[in-house]
Length: 155
Image 1 (tube, rainbow, N blue to C red):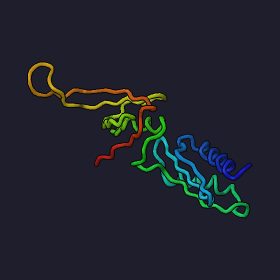
Image 2: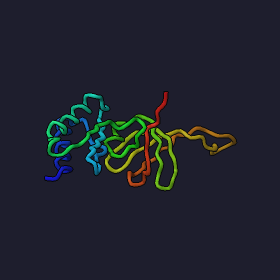
Image 3: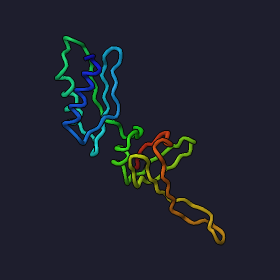
Image 4: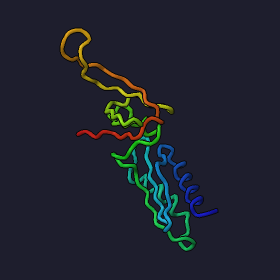
């Protein structure tokens, strides 16, 4: 078994012990720097990173192959990539850039395996008379049409 396969198996075993955690990114550079980015249904704390790190590091032999290991959580400003990340952010405001470069800042109201549903308020001309009125708009956007999506951090 090659080094990358062995690390991937150890990583999967470590994540299996913590079903609330899931993998966002995994890579091994040419100089054997292992980089793991995880997220969790309830967020990720330091102990989660330590547990995943130990499940990998304690089962590899540095005499056989020297390596460095970094396990980190997906940052608050990291783009959303997987349906599971969208689901954990239901109720929050996100900014979505679609394939046709439209940007929508809206509340994420639902996410399934194929698409997300957004809701936002917009000012539009009144149907009768002058002036504008606030209307609630909805959109369902399939994941394949999303170029980038990030959670909007508000204070």
